Amino acid sequence: MRTIRVCQTDDLADQGKLVVEVGDLQIGVFRLGDEFFAWKNRCPHQGGPVCQGRIYNKVFEKIDAEQKSRGRDYDAGVTHIVCPWHGLEFDIRTGKFAGASDKDIMNLDGYPTQVQDGEVYVLV
Ligand code: FES
Image 1 (cartoon, rainbow, N blue to C red):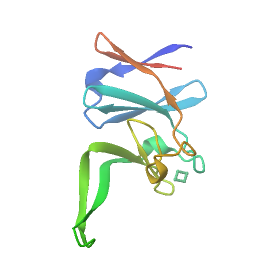
Image 2: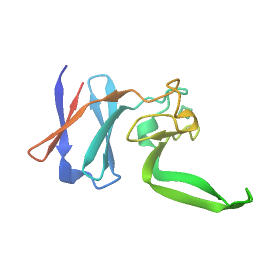
Image 3: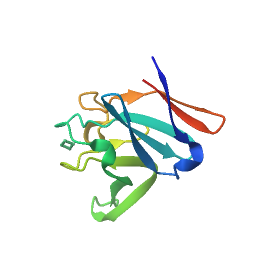
Image 4: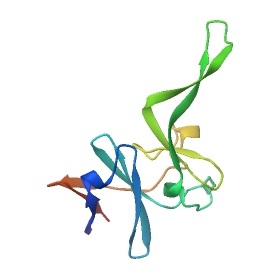
């Protein structure tokens, strides 16, 4: 396993991302608060560049006691990347497909990250 320096921590804003090339690999590195996550830039659906998608907090529908919709809202605690090819969403913290988070059938492939002395590293 190789340790690859990606950037300085300050180079990524909260909910920011950076796609880097490591040999034949493209890896998306994401920042959520003080945590960093790294995912292969290949969507498990049909191979799209998932890490180049837009970042949103999870959207959920508000349902009242009578089971009627009261509109949509954002979950500030769950952040998704949206694949630009067909719009499937993945949790940036876990890499899990948002449409079936209880199953491991279609999740992102990830890499460990390390932060040391203000530098972000990915272990490939
Ligand atoms: S290739 Fe990513 S959603 Fe289809």
